[in-house]
Image (cartoon, rainbow, N blue to C red; front, side, top):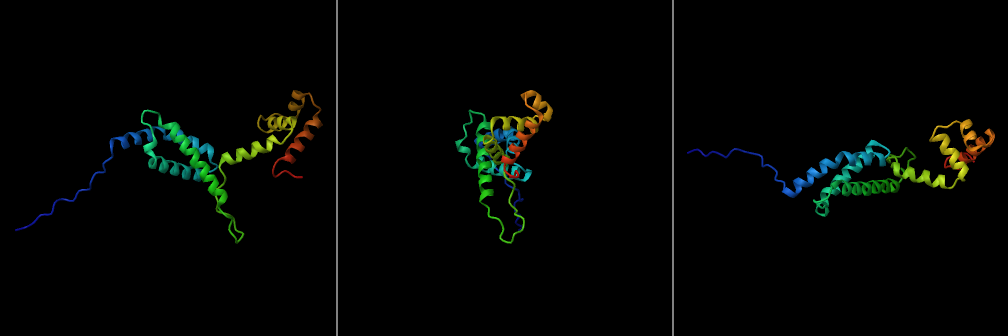
Amino acid sequence: MRFRSPPVTQPTPRIAPADASFAAALESALPRVRRFVERLCATAADADDVMQETMTRAWKYRASWDPDRDAAPWLLRTAFRAATDHRDRARRTPAPLDGSESERAEPCALELREEIEYALRHLSVIERTLLLGFHREGLSIEELAHAHDLPLNTVKSHLHRARRKLPGGRR
């Protein structure tokens, strides 16, 4: 008498209906969340790390998601918190003692934006206006002088002083 072993089959994973609807909601919100994270982070590697952390947290805390609401705001809030946690971890990572280049990730764009806004708040109104007009709006010195009814050399002096006051400016 021969015994036959039953055919080996792979079990199909079973997903609860609630988990299936959650997965579908995540998938529909994913492109929007990815664009948001890419704007927050300075590098693609940072964005990938933050997206992975966001999805991990979302799946872990899926019980707090309300199926009657859109998943995107809930997921965007989770992504923002993951990005700030990522930035804070990068700040706390100590530099190597051997003096070699640090392998720390670049800071998120959010951190850079905060530093720039802080520095701009410490400029006078005219310095800030001229600096932003020149660098952000792309106006020439002549156009700035004409728009603000200032002599050409005064505009140059204000721009020079504003740059010196910014971090990394020569003193």
